[in-house]
Image 1 (tube, helix red, strand yellow):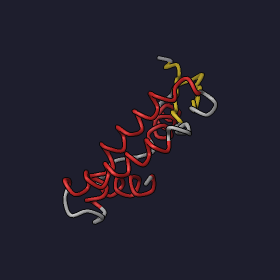
Image 2 (cartoon, helix red, strand yellow; image 1 turned 90 degrees about the vertical axis):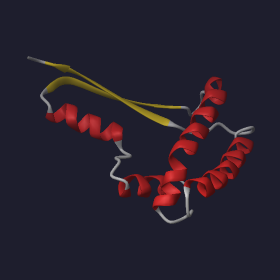
Image 3 (cartoon, helix red, strand yellow; image 1 turned 180 degrees about the vertical axis):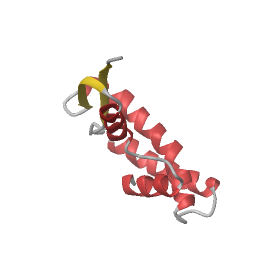
Image 4 (cartoon, helix red, strand yellow; image 1 turned 30 degrees about the vertical axis):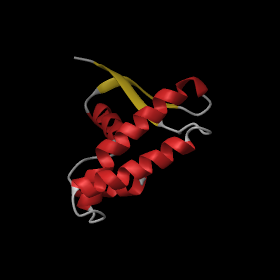
Length: 112
């Protein structure tokens, strides 16, 4: 599913690698004291519920247009039906497992 979304985003002219792009732009933009941090849900059971909801929301937003763009569904309605099944399976799996999500944050100091 991840690869399908990435392929479709690239095909649609979107960039799926925002954390790296932000870091590259900050480095090239004359910022100093640049710090990049990646946060993960691994080992953080207290975020279990919100992470499951967040990933399900991302799936519902990105996967249908991705499926249409890649020819895996004829239209958004068909894609949404397929994604509802995938989301249901994902949520069922997450009853016993924590979804692993990584978020990147980059900060730098602009010197003028």
